[in-house]
Amino acid sequence: MWSRLRSKSRRPPFLLHYRSAEWFIVTSIAIAIFSETLIYAIFIPVLPFALVSRARVERDEVQRWTATLLAVHAGFQIAFSPLSGWIADRTSTRRGPLLLSYLLLAGATLLLMFGRSIGTFIAARALQGAAAAAGWTIGLALLVDTVGVDQMGEASGWVSFSSNVGILSGPLLGGVLYEKAGYYSVFYMCLGIIALDIVLRLLIVEKRVARRWLEEKRHTQSIDDAEKADPQQGSPSPTSAPVIEVKQGVPSSSVSNLDSTSHDSITPQPPPPPPAEESPSRVPDQTTESNTPTQPPHTTPHPPAIWTILTSKRILVPLWAALVAATISTSFDTILPIRVANLFHFNSLGAGLIFLAIIIPTLASALVGKLTDRLGARLITTAGFLVLSPTLVCLRFVDHDSVAQKALLCALLAVCGAASSMLLVPVMAEVAHCVESAQKMHPERFGAQGAFAQGYGVMNGIYAVGTLVGPIWSGFMIDGTDWATTTWTLGLLAGVTAIPMFLLLGGWVGRRGWKAELLSPESEGVRKDRESKALVAVEKV
Image 1 (cartoon, one colour):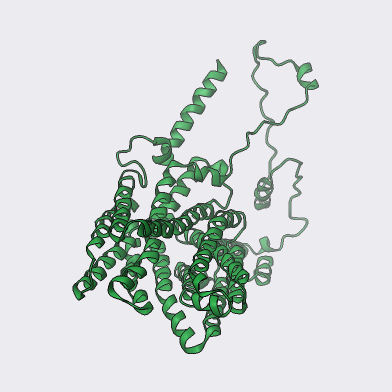
Image 2 (tube, rainbow, N blue to C red; image 1 turned 60 degrees about the horizontal axis):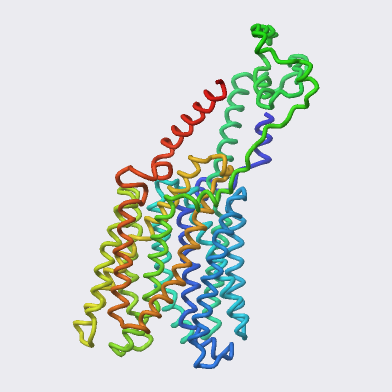
């Protein structure tokens, strides 16, 4: 009876089964990532006009301030990615930090909407960078909490798919809305999307929260079944219940065990037998021990979890892949519009539409994610870089204006897009495996919540570094050399990166070298057990 009254006072959340379902959580996170990338990209075609008409920037300084705002966004994303991961791993749920990222994104949107100075635009881009850091980092950590490490490839594929859709549709929607409905219409839509994200996040019931409700429901059901089987158990009388004396120092679990056996006869246990007589050499001096205060055991402080992740050799490989992928991807943002404008005489619309050849093939990211879970990150990532390398080099053959050259450029860009989709999705899955391996090797350094958010915070920060390196690299190369040299240097970078991806991603391909880091956690555990046994043997001697 009492259990039924307690269950009525604490009902589980409405539609708990659906709100905690994997498909609902993955869909909500994918929509959140879509919103972040859409809001970032939707302002790209509007920004040059807004700088002139609202921030009063001179036309000859628009390019400089555009690059500055992009650098501010990337800089704050680099700084806030590890920080947001650290905060998220120290909260009981991901709800609070993720909602905070939406509020930051809403604040950035309002600043861009009403701002009329360059300082306001800089503050807005800074908030956008911080929101992107928190959204990506915590969103990916929530995916791991939901689907588990082994299914992270497919989940990352859907997230990558939604990100590509946002990047694809953002500039198109921004240009059309600005042209047809005015400046404020762009931000009305952005605020509506953020409101949808907040509603979806409030509806999500995380797996760890749903698990507590389900366990409580099963516990309540078992008590109800016991009460139905023995009606006297649900309302015990004071005279029938045995009196159990709980002494200080008895664990609460022992008390609960005693309480659960209240109807059984409790017989006193015989006292333990006296200890065996020790030899005189082993008998301690009682007078000395009684006068010496007991010292607490000395514990060596462990390094923080994020330091353990950063110093892991295994995670360096996917981080390098993320850096190279971001560098190559953002290099095209700088040089491709200028190239097609000078070679094919495309206007701004044509220069924007040429990116469709890259982005459309990346919509197959969900399929890449499934293949990653089945084949592993090593083969998929290596194949991606091997296909990307010669394709980038072949871009040098697009050197004059003709229909055939335009078709060749679109075909090569489509292959680049397909290869690019094979890079980031396996990397996101591999980071989860790296963090899980580090947790198994050093469980004392990780809290109860784990450190998946911190792992993705590091990856997101490294990717943001690549977004800074890419435009600088390609801009420097295109100014100092030419299009052909720039593309083959990017192809060389991709080809060289394929080597460590094949040899080291997910572990040494030959299972030799870096054994402490790259082999399974069980191997490290065996080594630690052997060392501890050797230490005990030395102490006995």
